Length: 403
Image (cartoon, rainbow, N blue to C red; front, side):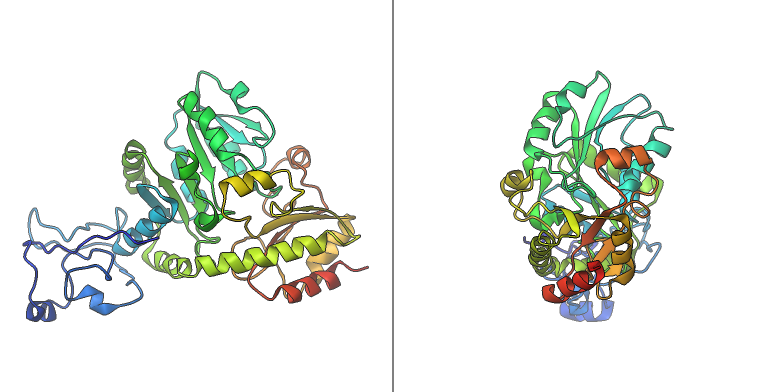
């Protein structure tokens, strides 16, 4: 996807001569894209977009501006990242925040006390914790439902304002038909919100299927190296854009310049990382199916997965997340203890393969009855497949799962 083409305009609207640019040293109004900037300086020709590590910006005079005032409002590095993520998802604006949870928290500020949201029953545990302990306290009501199986439309009330889904869900890999959900939402004047963290914009673009808002934990596949936290909201409606731009500057959780740069760096390899990780995930899923100690494998790239055909229709791939269940809790514990190349850690989407125990990690704050209802048992393990050699990963799992 091409980056947004914007041109660098100087304060007096007159292009600087080369001698002026040399004397000035840098552009007065950096456009955010050195490859198309008309200014001779072009960020000194830097291939890696600069980190503008500044809190505030000096003004030449009253009524004159460099285009930036204060980094809580906007920063050139953050603006560049937001433009790229916006284009990757096909929106009109994107908002970079300090974490995925910061993005969801900001999003919830769109709603008022008394509003009702239909939310998928199988969501990331942090999202459930936010909804139950913060959003409910603020007067927002929720109905949980398996959106991949049940009829969402029958749950819509007079005060319903949105439908909130993940697809695939975390960790049970349920697949919701986004186009169908959007038809229902828009028939009742509701917002459809899709958390696209598991698939990334490389494999799936929910806005093109009718979603109104896309959420990402940019910590995961977008950054891709387990070295920074980030979150994103992407919209395609100008009224939502205006409201969220006001909220992000008011609440102050915009992503810091250095973290923006780390995500910019990560996005450069998004395509190659996603392709390799997906290739590995399919090989591992197929191998796990052959193991007597594994009772269930959940990966939407397997033809027997109930969401396989939907994924083929709405996405360009199946991702690199999979969940499996062992025959005993003791074996699950042993696998977590004995992996070597694979690391037992709570996250996903990086170049390293990580194995997670949802019961005590990602979903520890979810009540046990809800976990069990969703299928998260003490034998459930979640695997975020990285880009290592697939045979090495399988060998590691083999020794970790053996008797």
